[in-house]
Length: 157
Image (cartoon, rainbow, N blue to C red):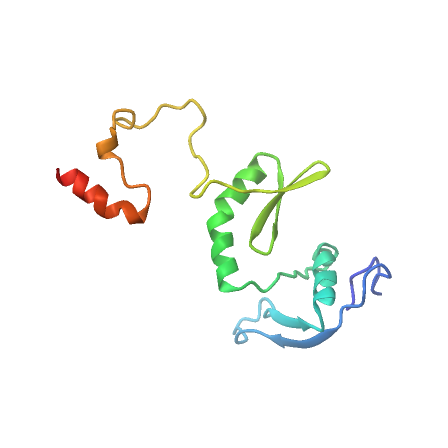
């Protein structure tokens, strides 16, 4: 594949990226302001990783490479996107590997394992919502779906 090295020749450090299939996606636009995306199939996983590894160098030439994600991986990334943005705004270097979110901190790389749900919106020490501190155990929601029946019975008593 061209453009992976410093010039127009492939880099000697990376294995050659062999394309087994390439096709344009979508219908051509009437205005033709920008080209249609191209779906490329590589001959193997090593060739795909070599192309994605060198995709940063291709951005100067307005060529962008994105991995083709499964629907499940797309849903996971969409749900984790607020965590990714929060890490970026905190000055960290987050990146994706498949559906897992990692953070580069100096020389270390660690997996970001957020608590389920959106990232905390309020700053630490912020005032709680009115009535939140006074809710007793009888007003608390069930902690698991299996306890829903016992919770409903406890509320009726």
